[in-house]
Length: 525
Image 1 (cartoon, rainbow, N blue to C red):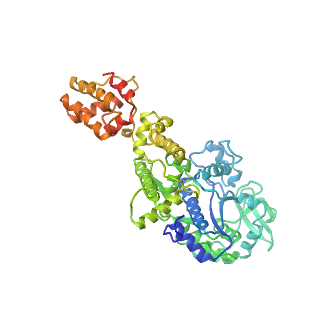
Image 2: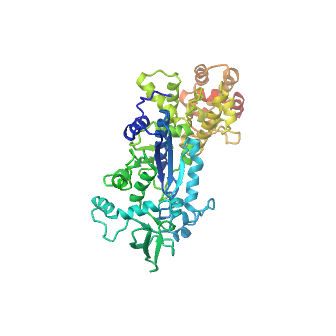
Image 3: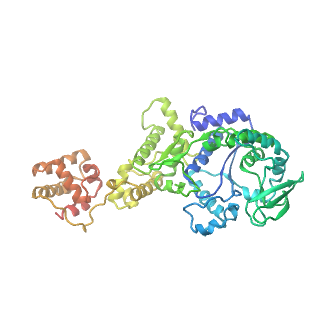
């Protein structure tokens, strides 16, 4: 591994946790979210940020508990646009999201469907937390003591919250929420507390009243600004980042860091992470709106290592966009350069070498670093080869020289991502397909047709035995010998081969195609 005095942000925070929390036998790092809709790539930023700090702590020989809380006892407030049967889901508003049905039919309830989508994909990018399900914990009575403590400290909690409010909470405010046992909705009013575990409430929609025991009820919970610090204290959380909404002045982190002391705990080390946008779509991504890009979507285009690299190489408090346009080519190139630097295949100064080495290590799915670099083929060239071979990954890999067994699996994944990008996201002028013999013939002048004949002969004689630079001379010769302008001839060749006026760099493109295939196409003229 890289030196422990690395200046990568994950290492800096690992050192800060040890310094501020002291030398502990076990450090607890936490993350979590309400599974109110599709868990998107913006949410993943928090998950991966915690995982990277966990990895940095473990690199220092520390034992770490990495917990991920599913806040699935939260209220179902809004039906996302991308969910089936929205009319049915509307009838479950104001109920806990674990009581909402999964209208996709894939899981036991709405919350569990969203949780499973994440739990299944996270291991593929090296994230393996311990999951805590808050609905289960609240309903089991696990937090009864925490709720009682909040009721005991009611006036102190109210005073803290009021400091950050323009209008003070009402005098009859209580630090507890109740889901009615009559309707399952949170449209209730707390009427009183007996000083122990008994809480009386009224269902505002039916007028019914009931007294519940916090130790046995499945109806009560703490509001977010009290729930969060209660769990910090209970789990002994040492580190948990949060988004800029929670970290804003007077936000839930400001209040929680004070309320946690009422539960006998201390606030964790934290940092603010910024939002992520998708290139071409500005603004914050939102689960509840249904306008999301998930981790599954990103892994369609970026390999797991590349996906991690996007976050490892960017400071958490920096906003950035995940691109699905031509920037993809540059991002793959940047990662390949990082890999070359790690393996000593690219000369850079020592400061950059140390920086890139640590980024490369943290970008890998496991702590085990590959024994050799991946097959270093430019992403653009790989895309061209895939289009030449109509997406046949085995054919592409077979056409390459020197692919080792340890490189093959990674190369297959990269090929799949490249093909997904070409077929789904690449600009139209980037895409092409070789003539399969069914396209109408291209209109050519006699001189262009004669030049095409010469080019076919040169391909038959010299393509396989010439390098790219040498064969470029034969292309020029075919044009010159027939009095055809070079630019016009290139256009004619592209039209004949792929039906477009422009395409990949011609000599390299011809070298990437098989002689037999090219001769077959050119023979039509």
